[in-house]
Image 1 (cartoon, rainbow, N blue to C red):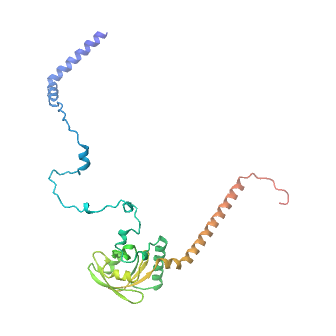
Image 2: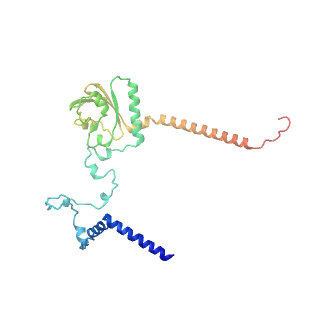
Image 3: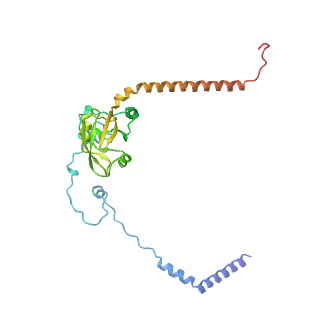
Length: 273
């Protein structure tokens, strides 16, 4: 039985081989075998690690042009200035401020919000028909840089896209000249003097009212001062929150008592009750 199976298998292999020869498949297989020879492996030279440590990576094969570098002239301080988290009163920032360091303040979130709300409330009390906006001051507005960006929508509705001179009038009636840059929608020249003369601080809120086509009336609301003025309102809000919490606690307690009572088994009450 086994011999018959082997003979049948050999006969089938011979038939398949003859069929491959007739179709030319065996010749194609031999041709592909000669083509796909293994390519000889290249001998890689070991790379000097010391050379990699000193050389800078380059992608270009062009000869490097030697240029003067200012990096070698810089003295690197490995002390406190090397820390990523630098102090707000660092010497680098203090170099560019235009006021004494002890006059510069860093407003809290509550101070900024208080001043902003006070400016909006004052504007509503004015009932003025003139266009206006409220701007919260940051350090780059009042201590250094002195570039004041204005709301883009306000500028598009009221100013042309060109550089022009405008006037800034304070609450006392004193007028300052400033330069409005239309393509950047902000104030540059003249704003620095206004900010320094009025000792504007971080967190102050300014109400800008366009009383004339090229004239702003500006009202200043200091962060610390408005925080004191808004203290009674905060106390009233706190009292409302306390009352609200008490009501919620009482309501939860009543619901708990009612649920417990519903779960208790019913008992027969004495006569007369």
